[in-house]
Length: 320
Image (tube, rainbow, N blue to C red):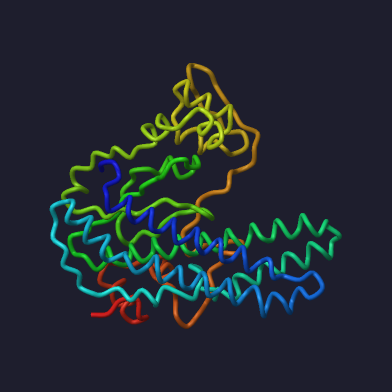
């Protein structure tokens, strides 16, 4: 595909503004946590404010999805003719993995209490706990934005799939996926705080794919410091020497070897944390059996377009 268009940039800027506002609100709420009454202050002063801030942000980031997809189709000289209407409010109130926001955020206070019980320094524990809370906040809002766009794309017959758009600076795991095309039935792989986007791809674009959003182009656009931070100094040096970027990233398994400039490089590091599907399968992002699956879980379950549309309608994410 081509470089990001105006609809992409506007959606990204609006999304990031909403994320920043919510993070600021949640950080302010955290200041209400009292050491002498952790549970009481968490349940009455901190958590309710954080949940409301995230829910409101989820609605705000879901609302523009249909208009964005329509604008992207217009830019591609395609016709927007959605077969359903997005319900922005349906995307709020839960994490992508199905946990209620209340239960998700309770992991933060649970960690804080356990760490304090182990004798860790209160100031250190409090800072780590806050960062976890802010990570949950930013991740769930950006996940909501992406899954709303994914849902809006599914309602448009002209959309054949999506392209992964990577924003710089980016981590190596995301950068090697830049420009790849995915069918609409595929979920979106991401890590916490990932700000990559999904761009609608028409059938004509799919058949004539000529991505400008490539790992090599993005790596070249990064400063040396950004390259070193994203890949590590030695790996970035190897890529600059000619190593395949995907080969370097995938070599982050113990004993793996890659070649650059006629020299062999190896790593003794353990396996790098991989990107996870939005519905998740480990850690705090385990899949849960719930009466109403999230839109992300519906996509993770798979199926053809018609099957996905039926389920999204059934659970209120779109209306006819």
